Image (tube, rainbow, N blue to C red):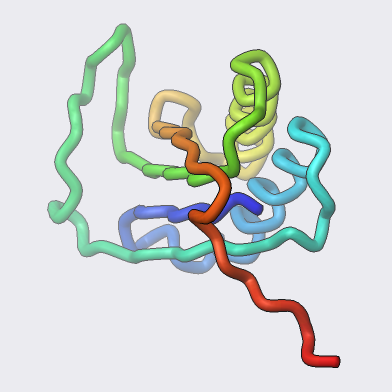
Amino acid sequence: MPLVRIDMHSPLADLRPQLSEAINSSLAEGWGMPADDLFQIFQLHEPGDLFYSRTFPDAERTDIVFIDILAYNGYTPEIKQRGAELIVDRLAALGIKRDNILISIHENGDGDWLAPSKEQ
């Protein structure tokens, strides 16, 4: 059950539904998670509120979209990279410049989640 936080500048606000679908479908396909495992937080920022390198490493950034993924541990590095690459590809198809995307993936384990099921 990944929890995905997306920080971006407010001019991109109208793209939230498409970004959400692109990110979720990438994780479902790339990580093999259920498509309805959807938990995302979008945080909009005014232009100038997000600070980032325009050039590191070998980039030509004009903006930034931070994508922070908290996932249950156990995904291999290859699986994590596959999901991240799919996210970049799908966001690029929406017009987000590849250099403007930064993805962070971190993990936690047993006892670190609580998502109660429906009551019986």
